[in-house]
Length: 392
Ligand SMILES: *Cc1c(COP(=O)(O)O)cnc(C)c1O
Image 1 (cartoon, helix red, strand yellow):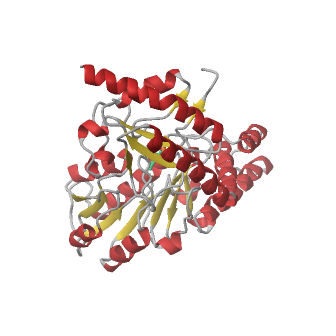
Image 2: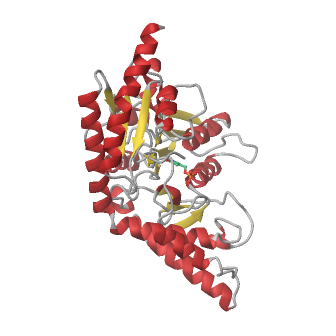
Image 3: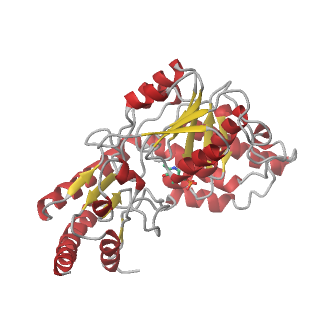
């Protein structure tokens, strides 16, 4: 790694917080199986229940409505599989019950691909369009909702452009139609206030590694009375909803990360927004003809997505990497694919411009000097790449 390391890819993942890491290392010796009756088991169990309360508190939910999973992807899949079993027969074909699901064009691949899976089983899937700033078109939602709608899944905040949806209003419409509402809030928690009752969601997804916790652990909030079927069958852990010996170290780290995130919500938002604004304004001043993607106000404080016409995204990333700057094109999950970002396409950025777009996502590890370093290094990179593409 180069000396001037500027990691600005916090929506892909975050480093472990020092406090979280220290607590996890200490608890590596808490080896009891949390399902055992003896003292070692009870100690492990107590830690898990403490963490459950902290994770619940982050979204305004009582601990008993929180199920631990292996991460955001598993939480989202659990909801889709539960819904599948609400409306389908054993052979996978839609029987009676409701058979329509609604989601949006800018969801994370683990939601979109789950929706496509249900479609292959016979569900009718409606993918809602978004406007040029990434907000789900509510008239399209109204038009799609009907008495046959089983559930709606719309993310709270987008990982690529940061746009934050009006989940409260979406919930009002979805409840009127008598359907369930799920929201992937992986990018929202820890950055903007999240309260499951105020939002009116039935299911809400979280992941630890996006909020300075460990990878491989996440949670699903399930409203009392909403159906839930296990993705993993086995023992009676998580009241039978998620079998398998507890990942107690991961859960401990998640709980601590959640309580830190809740306590620092305001300062985190101020810290990242100030740096994001400095980066945005500096780029607008130094690089002609760029475009900021996403919503100007309904947006995560830490996310900045910029299109650089005339430069190619992968080339920008490689050039930045040589200077020790680590950002991304679109989402980490989509990198390595040659397809332009489905999120940028959905907000009307053409394929060529989408290929020349960079996501900067900020976090605790950055300061003003890091932003100024980017503002010093990036403009000449763009100018060089643009002149090369003109030569071609
Ligand atoms: C990262 C992410 C996920 C996946 O979470 P994992 O814990 O990595 O499985 C899901 N949704 C969004 C919006 C994400 O950013």
